[in-house]
Length: 107
Image (tube, rainbow, N blue to C red; front, side, top):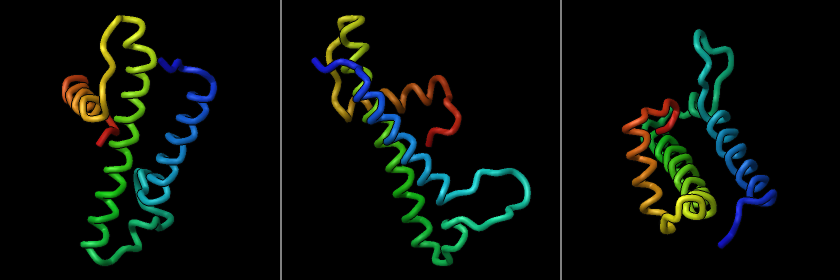
C-alpha cells in the first residue's frame, strides 16, 4: 500500500494550486465593483460560457474526489482498518459529506 510521503504532498499541492489558479483566472470572486475582466467575462456566447463553467466544475469535482480517494486509501484505510475505495465511491462520499457538513466553496 502506498503511503503519504513528500512526493505525494508536493504533487497534490501542485495539482490543487493549478486547479485553483485556473479557477481564479477564469472567474472573479472579489466583492464589489469589478476592476478587471476575467476570461469568463469576455465570453459573449452563452453556450460557450456554459461549457467553460461545466468544464471548470468537472475539473474541481474530479480533482477533489481523486484527492479524497488517495487520502482515504493511503491513510484512513490503514488507520482504521477500512477497505480501499474507488473513484466512484470517493465521489459519492464527497457528495454526501458536502451535503451533510455543508462545505462552502465546493461545487
